[in-house]
Amino acid sequence: MALVGIYSYPKSGNTWVRGIIAAAMQASAKEIPDLHERPLSDAKEFRGFRFFKHHAGHNLTKWQGQDINATHIIHIRRNPLDVFASYLNFISANVTNTASIPFESVESIVGTDLFDLYFSSFTITGHIAPRFSVQTGDYFSHNQYWMNYADKPIARIRYEDLLHNPVTTLGFLKDWLKLGDEDLEAMLERAGKSTKKDGKFYWRQEEKNYFNFLRPEQIDTFLKYRGDECLALGYDPEYLRTPPAR
Image (cartoon, rainbow, N blue to C red):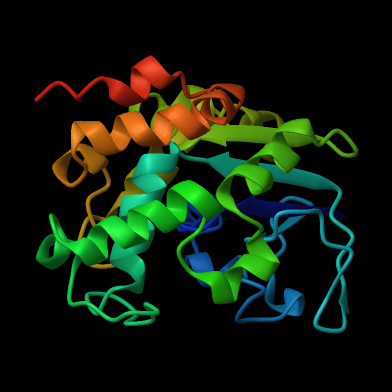
């Protein structure tokens, strides 16, 4: 039986992808266990495949006493500035209230010193939640590891491609699970109902949401120091500087 690890840096679309795959099973995303919360034994078998989620910045072989022997990998990446904004929402009181320096919401601190401090932390260290960074690595090292990974079959997904061209982006599932385009479209529709935008965990669900919060000079400073790494991950600095069409 094949075992598929679904890996991503936090706030890159992992729960969405799990929901899409679970929809093929006529099940909830919980049937694809988040190993941070549930054991691998909870994974449901579907057409010879089982799936699990983790945010590790490397391939797991063991986790909390469990042997993890994935045969296939799915890795999801998202542009770093949208990851920053979404992660900042996640640690705010709007969702988990786990920020090192508490705040109510992203919207409530935009333009303040505290917002700028969190963005400086992300620019310098690649993360804003140090207590999770041991597992995940920083944003850049995490994604670079999986971009270079070649030990097992791997499907690499960009969040932005999943937004705009989901059937093509998920085309590898047709081979793995013996699905057609109609199956993928039905999966996307079912998953959309359980992962629809709610202003909290499913916060904005849009490309370049960061333009609602970051000043142009902040984006320029970030790219001055991190632009080459963004390019290596498939995010051209000019793309990141260009506002979305409204």
